[in-house]
Length: 253
Image (cartoon, rainbow, N blue to C red; front, side, top):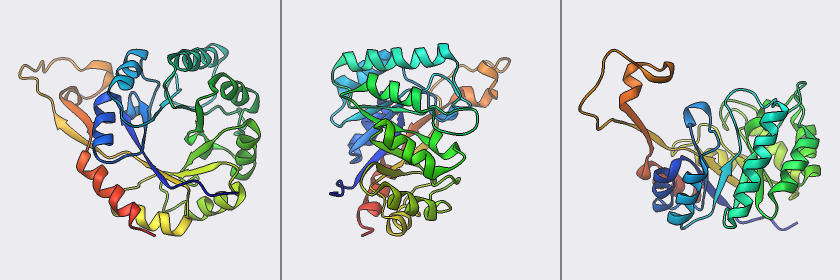
């Protein structure tokens, strides 16, 4: 099968992150809320604003909460509802999903239902894949469910550590599903991973923390159980880091 063109996707939080990524040369964005929890479903208002400002395609993560990927019936129904709402908007390029069974397998029934609900949008399986008990079986399950791509660090903390599994995934996939590498990718590591694995696509977040513009600060209360200092910080996408990392990745081969 013909190999798809190499693409780079940036994981961002909100519309400001999307703008920063596309200004830096990203070809696609994964749009999330709450990256501190690994990414949750953004509000429909955020998605509508993203559609207004986007000049590149974006995929929306469908993840109702942090933690594991073993969802209750109510949580799963909310995922279906979110996908339906996004599909009805008409211009959202794709969704990013992941459902597991309690014994660490891809939940094929639920995955197939989410894929069917999403069409004609593209469907990516996120790093729930990296939490499966046997990656070869998980990859075949995703292919059987009609998933278009899988985001993976090779079941390790970083893509460098998982490079052998990433290479094996490429061999198993054999053009049937896109393998998108992630995990600790930056200007220092991305070229090595691309050369060693030959993955179809690469995905990273390039974040920096800025001090809040608030001049009044209440020292007696912190919101949501976070440290008080966190209330006066903002995490944003670093345009220059995105641009530099993309340049290194494109020059790797």
